[in-house]
Image 1 (tube, helix red, strand yellow):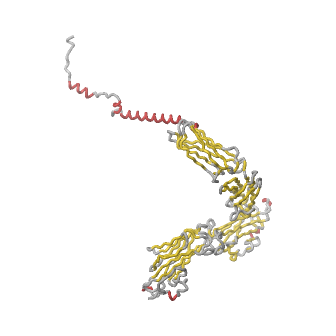
Image 2 (image 1 turned 90 degrees about the vertical axis):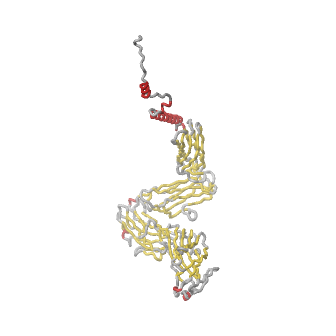
Image 3 (image 1 turned 45 degrees about the vertical axis):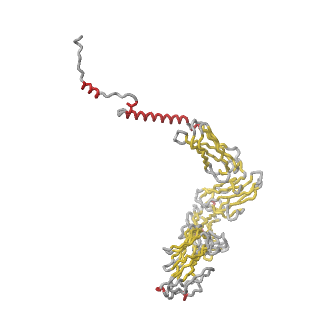
Length: 612
């Protein structure tokens, strides 16, 4: 046993090498963040955070459902056109989370009005927050206008963002409301189909359906732009062709309006006549009833067209005194011949100078009725117009200058002519006693803006004096006064600007008289430009109203090299302004004036040349 037991010497270097080759194992949380374990640790943390976020989202969504939100629109059963009703919008949040940034939106169809009479299309209210397991209601006070039996669908939308959810959601509800009574009924009768240019008539009947009188009513018709009114009975209020006022409509009383006119348009187009009845309440008219009637344009057996040669017929603006060359074209649009046609043109007498009408050797003009007429005896195509055959007539007429203005309301003139073609010899296939088609053509007439420049030494206006030698003398100052006079024709103008440049050697005295309101005078010393700006110049200035005028003083100190000459005192003057009616820029100018000053009768020509 002793032989087996041996004492072995320990190698210290070997022990040290073993210790260095075998690193110590680190224990605990610190070991998770050493260089070797750090990527795995970060990945694990990200996964844990994602799981927490997903869990929070799932928990939030499980706490919210759109199905747990109730929304409905309450309204009365009995709805009378024009009467005030209350809409009650009730909402309830049955979720376990709050709804934030909540908006309630109501969308209305046509015919819904506020109590103040404004037509409503959309109303929005902020409800801020609807707490969990709670709700509320909002009321809207409106008037519903329409015909009996007409239905209106109102839609409510609740737009919101649930707490802890980034997305927005919305719930909607709708209610179909039917008008079951009217205070004032409206019935319109007219043609379901009409040929383009055909004369049509509408009968509008309105009736008080209550057992009480209704006062302070207004009936208003809204015509299609292609309906040209010819006759109305009873007549509307002054300066309109579509508004009637009634002091009182008795209980059960019925009244009517007859409308006659020509209906234009393309085949297949739908033309609408709208009529409304309103009542005056709190100084505003509120709609009580409204109705509309639809007429469709059918194929016309005759086509008619009016145009002006060498003029843009789409933006047709004319000038006073202008010669107008009209061309009337017609065509047979059927598969059968048309015979014995008569073509007539009616001219509005206020703007045309009938002494200068020219029918080009055919037709006849009746100055008693202001009607030009052509028949088959002079125009063969009117005697027999074969299928798809066309024909035309020409005539010219001159516009008056100036326009006939006798009062403040004589403005915004138009050149209007109406052409009518028809025949009593109607083919049997049309089953009507007469074929007649009409068309109207109108152009706006520009105003006339003009400027006149006058110069005086002997100033006619009181309180203004000129000084200095006359004739002008070398090295001596002589002053003159310049008058700018503005005239305007039949339309209002805006942004009117007048300017001229003073010649070298002419000085600005900085003295002027301007009695025109909303205008200003300026002078630029560097450019020597004198200017006058007027915001608005009414129609009739210089015709039925006094001219607009400014007076300003200038001076001349002649040089020795000007002896014997008549120096220019003011260069050409320019004016421009915008015609509000025709949207056209109008311009004019006045020539330069020298020291001969022809408008001053006391300053003789012999006093105009510079002396030493």
